[in-house]
Image 1 (cartoon, rainbow, N blue to C red):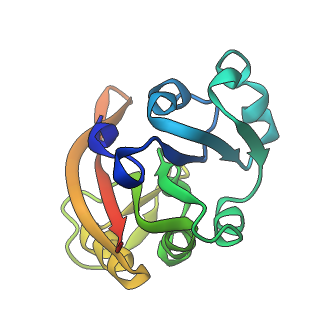
Image 2 (tube, rainbow, N blue to C red):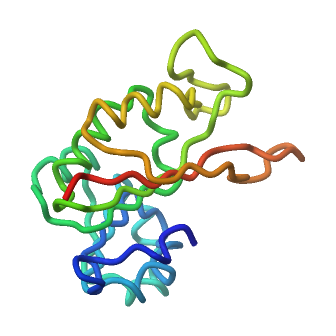
Length: 177
């Protein structure tokens, strides 16, 4: 919903990358604002399960995200990384490759799971559930260092786990025009 105001250049439909698209849950949400919608995921199994949402995408590819993005300079107006940053510890590589794949003025939208009450210590931590949590200050610093400016950072509940809310941040960042 954060992306509703986001558009391509001059309010045109945008070239959008759904990075770590999984089973294509974002497809129906992103399609209305897309001139072209590409979904990329590391797992062939996930992509096989896109089936009924396949028609939302112009292209679906099995690829490693950072490699894919770093090879496509300026190809996208919007890159969405929903629920995928949690599989990265250090954020410099995903943010830098997203920066290179974004056109000038392009937007990166992503979610992270935040470390509760952690203001110091390591910027990220591998949790028992096998995903990484990130310190908000570390995430913001990694964005800045990759050349992206934070536009919006909202607290969100990412999912329920063991009867408790899992808290995270939904972030919009922009590459300078």
